Amino acid sequence: MKRGNVICLLFWPMILLAGMLHAQAPASGTQASPAPAATKGVAAAGAKPSEPPKATPPATPMQTAAQLYRNGKLAEAEAAYKEVLQGEPQSPDAYVGLVRVNLRQKKLAEAETALAKAVELGPKSNAVRAAQGEVHFRQGRIIEAQDDFTPLVKANTAEARAYLGLGKIYSAGSLRMHAKLMYELAHDRDPEDPDIHRAWLFTLSRKERIQALRGLLSEEADEDEDDRGHLETSLAAMEGAEVEGRTGCHLVSKVDETHIAMERMLYGAARIRGYGLKVQLNGTKSNLLVDTGSTGILVSKRIAEKAGISAIVKTDVHGIGDKGVAGGFVGVAESIKIGDLEFKGCHIGVMERNSVAEEDGLIGADIFSHYLVGIDFPDMKLNLTPLPAMPPPSDTEKSLVAKYPKIAGFRDRYIAPELKEYTPIYRFGHMLLIPTRINELPSKLFLIDTGAFSDTISPAAAREVTKVRGDSNIQVKGLNGAVKNVFTADNLTLTFSRFRQPARDMLAFDTTGISNSSGVEISGMLGFAMLYQMEVKIDYRDGLVDFGYDPNRFH
Image (cartoon, rainbow, N blue to C red; front, side, top):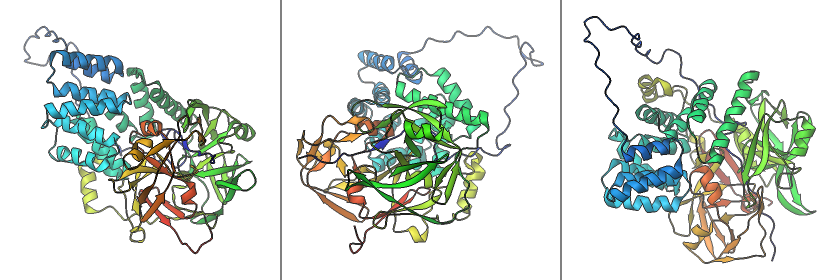
């Protein structure tokens, strides 16, 4: 038995491609000016003679371990916390430190073990409760994480990471005003925490972000080279745009509504791989696969060369496969034409290969996020219609902005009456994660991915309900080459939105890579082989999706 390839893309969401939301800078004058510093060498009238400065006490072992973590020296921080536990085996705070180090090191199992000890030793500790929320979040148990963080925030806890954790949940739920508020409160309490600082700085204006990123990268020697590399890529792309005076990717066409034909993209002569769009990059024609699992536009080196797109910064491309990340770069397309739409000044991802998953490239549906996006597979149409108008700010919003001026310009999700039947999802960058039940288990998070050929599941999630078997006859390929270990899962049923999808011999492979990149457990993907029977509607602004299925339509 040999099945068609599963193609899936995970492109780093921090690169500023089309469709990404940009934070707005707070209006000038919203902050009180800092008090003037005392002039050096001049004592105030009536002041007592100055006393010699007191010697700074040496750092405690816990403080040393925490500082190593903040400096990005994760292996040393882990060793330091373990040394603390040698002398203080009953310290819940040391185990909390290990939880956070292990999460940064992408060692979830070790973080879970450390958390269990922390809970055993300090069940009523606010620090332990916050760490528990962080682990629940990474496990994809978003509701439980929210239940951990919310009581702490309501009690005005000093634990800054409780505000960070709740902010990440609000951000994933498209509650941008409340996310911004949580990040500001976290930053006020602990501006030196690197995780808080990173979340906060990506809500700033471009100029402010550039300055903050420069400071972060100069101060922090992060052992995670991949993570640091993506921050450097993001900084270089923003600096280039700032120097050249580019305003970023923007739609120049005055088009309120449009319906663009999609084309079948085939394996061989007759087997449908997916649906694509005709896209002109600087006048160069290309056919790009519509991929809700991707972001912006990613093209092959061949297409980029024809279009005259050159590198402004090197980067790498993450996706499915076990051959390691693929090399690439980010360039700028001065013009992108799709149907009667034209975008200008957009960042384009380029792979250092002559094809992208055997295609000219991929186009993420998020490039159309200014519209309500309808991917109508049965009728082979991309339907772009106006989003419901946002209502004016409520009195509650106005009073919140008056109290916290820095959150001005951010709005929470709005569920319009005409979209009340849509399903809320979580957004992690460009990724659309939908709560999905496997048989009767509590919901897990699945990626809505029109670029994946079929539905897939992680072996760990499948083993909770059914048998999983290895199958060397199945080939699964992605942007990063072939997947080494492929399995099939016996009978199971996926329940999402209003639908139940029975499946037998569902493809299963490890999803740790994309889970680590997103920071939350992704237990599987809803792929093209099922979605092509539907019209998938996406409201990126408000984090809502709808799946329209009519059995009488041609599929």
